[in-house]
Length: 534
Image (tube, rainbow, N blue to C red):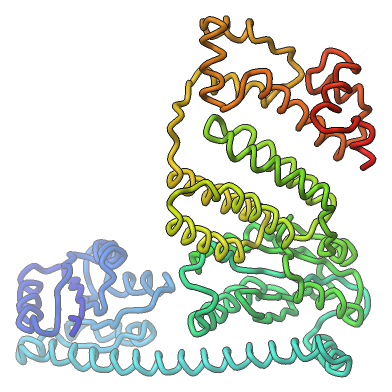
């Protein structure tokens, strides 16, 4: 049983000693956590110690007991039980004590005549407090069940309207009744989804998920509570839809999505993604937009934390297939960048940024992007001797990949798995720091006319030693490595830019257009122009 924490406030030392002894005579029930000589000290101790009960005199120098209790009441915290000790001449303070919700008003003489009166009164208050706490918990449980039932009903009505035109009309009518604009006006819909990577439970744990869905819906409802009309729908798999509108006479100010996401992290200790669609039309035209928001498979794959109009939001969630030539190209480029990441992260970061930019511009299917990364990792895992451990790693990777909600999560998950894979594979090649730095420079700027002799001299190596160390570090000779790097970069520029062929040749470091054409055809079997058309 937890003891009741008591703070004693009394300015006269002899009286304080007597009352202290009374309280300490019942160590089974009470813990005297502090003593103060006046109201000012008592107030500071209350702020620090947060007692359950305050036993206080009224008339004291400086701040008196009633002024102290007024300050405590103004804090707005859960209020402690208050017992006031007084002399006969203090009865004119009784009315003020009642206003301050004092639980008991005891005469000091009575307490001295009956040494158990104070602790008996405190024990009665403790019993009352326990009863009130139980009643409060029951009330909170009932309110939670009611709110949970309301959320379930709202969810059912919303999902039904996605399937039935008749139900859609009824649901939109309920929005009008809730105060959402009939025609024109301004309102917004927020789609918010918990980041699966930050969850402390699996989305397959339905009971756990239901609890967090309820908690998330309450947080969202609280955040939208300042708007005259608002509605929250708890969807599946950690996803929520919030609708809100301002009163007609007030300017409409959209929610700050960054603040909303931060609030979810603060209250639920989970990360979240959010998108907002702003309407400039009445609820009668919301149906298609809300349907797209609620049913979109990957609403946050390429963007999150931004607002858009209803028309822009519709375009954002339409995806296109990845062309097969581009899939082959990016598989090769990512594979090479991962292999080279043992030397430097520069090529991996460069390829990630380039693939993200092109994927977002072309609206490539997220599932196909996942498949592309999965294919890269599968090809790299074939060289591992630890077959069983590699299989387990691949299973875990596929599970993690399935839960990825954004492009960057897919990339980071793959890189993390590859690094674990590399540890299983082992690597007997030592890395020369000087060579690794030169490789990084080559990736960052291919337009420079690199020469074997100049690079060797820049790190104080002889040409033969530099050549041997370069091949040991990269697995390829300097000329083969640099040529491959330039051709791969040229292939990417041919497929993803409108640059002329001679401009691309110059950008990747070829001295003249003829030399570029000749080497490109030798390496790929076709001219740059044919490659671009194909």
